[in-house]
Image 1 (tube, helix red, strand yellow):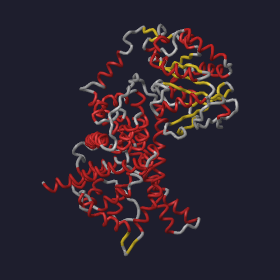
Image 2 (cartoon, one colour):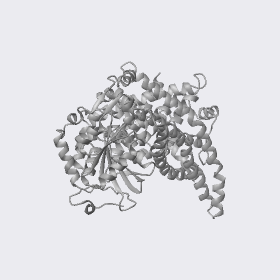
Image 3 (spheres, one colour):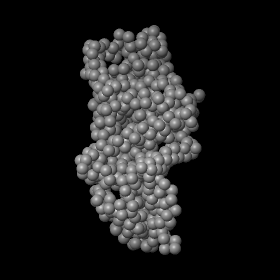
Image 4 (cartoon, one colour):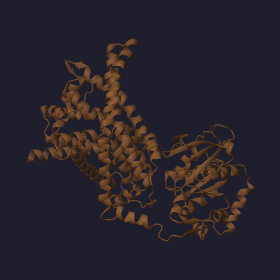
Length: 631
């Protein structure tokens, strides 16, 4: 149920957010807070999985709403984007400020970190000035207790003039009290706000966070942060920070490579077993043979191929990545790489979006929302495809296994080591492309940002799995399926329709053979990359299909047999290197392109994001092929 301007009073702003009420007397709660204070944990503790996600109208900033019922009273919780201030310096702060000014809620709750209370007070005081009815939730009280930090919540409540509730949202402690505080505020009269304002003025704390917190916080253990500082010296040190980061990266790749093989095979066999049933079902309803084959061997086979190849590695990579995020390590990655990106006139936060690109470039592009500067955000978006997503991993691994690593280097271990080297090349090219864009199309000086180092925490494995699967894996898989379905039909047409006894696929491969030879490849390989635009996962199957002159996608699971097929069609180790280089750096897939268009709102930047890696990848292949010919 949406709330109009008239329902919230004269002068309210229309932020275009539809409030999903179930009953007329439901209480709408705005959850605000700095990043890394556990606001999402409070939100999840109150709503469970009863959530609705989307974007704020006209913005790429994500919104989340949840519904809860407590003691017969319904609550609609709106998770406002995490920000440090309501002074709009970013899209997130603009959205937060607009919604809090709109009055399209009944109660505002500011979530604070018990270990960083004074830093959270700036936003808290701004929200209390805007909201008619507000409460403060001091979260992570369990962590404060472990570090012997005591907070006088009663005195804080007296100084702020609003209810203050201490919570440990991970274990559900304090959530009941928070519900009661919200319900009490929703039923209170306007005079209560005036009393709260008067209390803050008398306490001397009007817009002075240090005065509000003075004498409230007691540190019984003066070295309560010593453990985190020791970890930081190890994980962000000049000598150890980068090696540890590379070691973790290697571990994630190895687990993804090894762990995804078996479930991918199971899914592939399962989907293949349904082909004949699908074909018989279409026959029973009178579908002609040609249409049946196009739907089954074209649309269905490509669609299920993409799912079986994409789903397992994403289901492994994204939870592992989210565990690093939940533990507090990812901001340290940004810290380690900040100097490199600063030298490229880019933003250190690009390190985080680059890491997300390893799972999926489309997810990495969406992650670029965390970068405040529009110029630097565009740099991060355009260069995100320079790191390979999991859709390009199978081809890279196959090339390494067949022509370089094999069993001599230790199988999967050797492949993971070489893969890490390929990844480092992609990271280096990201730096180069970022620098190039910053002195050409996107000139400017790097902005400075405050990088918050959250405390190290034990990840919540259950929540991590749910969040990564629902928010990331299924989101990316859904977009991939949308682009792969029509591509399957087109690919079947090219492979089966003939012109003068030659398939369209053969004609196109012959046409592209000339430019492909200059790049150290052949026409079939280049055509496979072009037809693989909807999903990188189908590039290698298209190559096999064309070499075998078949009418649908084929797979060869035996690496020795596949290597013999490739060698019989003129492949050498130099061809493999050219294919690896172009696999690493070429145009982003259709899913990523659509995401770039949505995030930037411009076809110009989408085309540039398509051309920059394509031109650089082609140039690298031509250069490598020229060098090998020269020597």
